[in-house]
Length: 116
Image 1 (cartoon, helix red, strand yellow):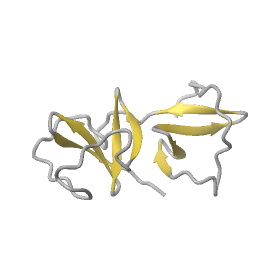
Image 2 (cartoon, rainbow, N blue to C red):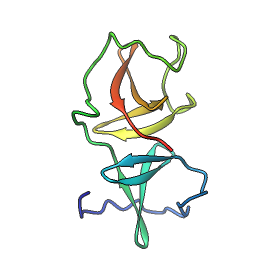
Image 3 (cartoon, rainbow, N blue to C red):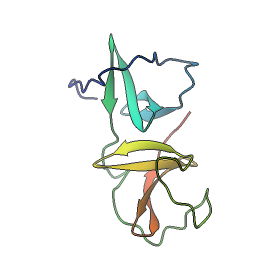
């Protein structure tokens, strides 16, 4: 994890066990999924994190991906019911432990994540 902080300003919610938000494994620690953001408690503030595009979580277009976990006509977006997560320069949605990215009428597979 980098020593650089990207503070999430105006964050009043106290994240911790039992706070009601799912966690995601990220760079050797747990971040909280909160309103499309990855929040990391860092001392007296909350940092804004995002998943890097990597070998484990690529940002490639995968039009042949057979999306499981939702109907073929399901469209990912802010009110689709799946947790949003910042990934590189875009937003993905967590579906059954995988990152799905809505792209040109199909769903790209951007790798797996560990959600608790």
